Amino acid sequence: MELNDFMGSKSGSTYDRLETPKTRNAKNPGGDTAGGRCSRLTAVCLGLLCVLLLTAIIVLWVKFNHLATQSDYLQRSVHNLTVEKEGLEASHKNSVGEIRANKNKVTAEKDKLQTSYNNLIKEKDQLQTRYNILAEERDQLQANKSTVTTEKDQLQTSYNNLIKEKDQLQTRYNILAEERDQLQANMSTVTTEKDQLQTIYHNLVKEKDQLQTRYNILAIERDQLQANKSTVTTEKDQLQTVYNNLSKEKDQLQTRYNILAEERNQLQTSNINLTREVDWLRNNNKNLTREKDQLQTNNNNLIIEKEKLQTRYNNMTLERDTLRSNFNNLNNLNKQLQTTCKSKVVDIHVQLGWRSFGSSIYYLSDEEKTWSDSRHYCQDRGADLIIINSKEKQDFAVKTVGGKRAWIGLTDRHTENVWKWVDGSALTTGYWLPGEPNNAGEEDCAEVMGVVMKEGWNDIPCTNKNRWICEKSITDN
Ligand code: MAN
Ligand code: CA
Image 1 (cartoon, rainbow, N blue to C red):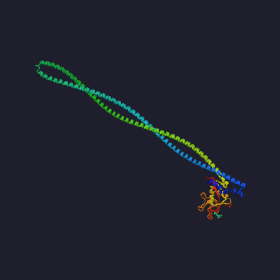
Image 2 (spheres, rainbow, N blue to C red):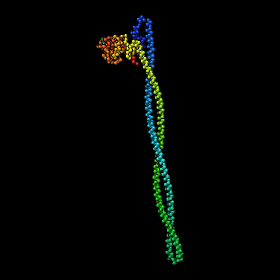
Image 3 (cartoon, helix red, strand yellow):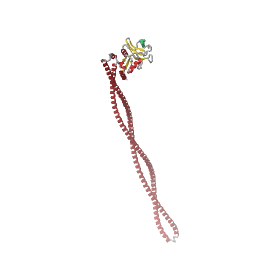
Image 4 (cartoon, rainbow, N blue to C red):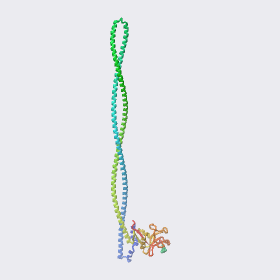
């Protein structure tokens, strides 16, 4: 803006007004002499040089702005990517921590299950062994029971046979006894008829002897049978005792067998439950193994993603470092250019009659204008009326105005007796002449006077025409 303004001042009537007194004194009123032409040529060359310089400055300025925008954008991108990367790294760390914790838990649970599974297998084997022993014992008892039952049946058969034989002997004995009784009865009859039948008697005696012999034989046989019967009875009693004992033992065995059968059933039930539990544990183990494999896969994927992100991060760090280096180089270049540019601007302004003081340049007009017109003149050149806020500046202003007077950028036109500088700041230290400001007839604008014994400020009407002092900062961008 200021540069364009400056360029504008070159070709118009304003430029003529900017000519230094020195230049103006050099003019020949006669006009077209060799000295005059030389001066014009110099002015034209200077103008061209200014145009070239300003063009270069504009191009560099535009380029610098473009590079600065790019640099900002890249810096923002780097920052966003760094934040994203940190977020991803944090979430990755959390995920890895969780996976490790889960993996340790799963491994511990798996070990526990394996241990309990091994214990169950051992218990199952022990139960199987005990079951086999019980089954063998049961089979032996079954065999013993069959043997005892067979023996008992044989003994029962023998006993029944002996009873039958005994009954037959009894029947025969009864028949013999009956026959004996008949013979006895016949013998009485025969005794009566004994005499008559002496012969018969002898025969009968013989027969009786024979019968006696037979009877004796039968008696012996009976005694033998009786003895046999006693023996058989004893044996029967013994057998009965044995049978009773066997029955008792059988009952006891039956009871033990029932208990064993119940125990066997319980063991079978336990075995089925254990088998089910083992199957369930096996399934669980399979599921846990599957989950573990999935977690392992997830972990591997995360590690791959992390490595990719790390690579991207490293590449971006390199890019960022390169960009930073470029930015620093550009910044340095920009600073150098700014310094050079400012120095050139000051040089050009000085050549056009501006004076350098501190970090600003100042222009004292030869013309006279109202306070507002004077201010517009300065503003049109990227400057404003001078602000005097230090003793050094006051001394510089007095020296510049040199025995004359000029507008300064101070007014109370908005609120009477409230003096403000043109940049809106309030007046803190004033270098007023004694008795001023006195507002003698609506005096709202300030001037500086460099008249001997009258070096200071005075208020006068803003519509008065006066010289002025412009101030232009060379530190502003
Ligand atoms: C005298 C003084 C000033 C006043 C001017 C106006 O110099 O009264 O205060 O501003 O006249 O011309
Ligand atoms: Ca006054």
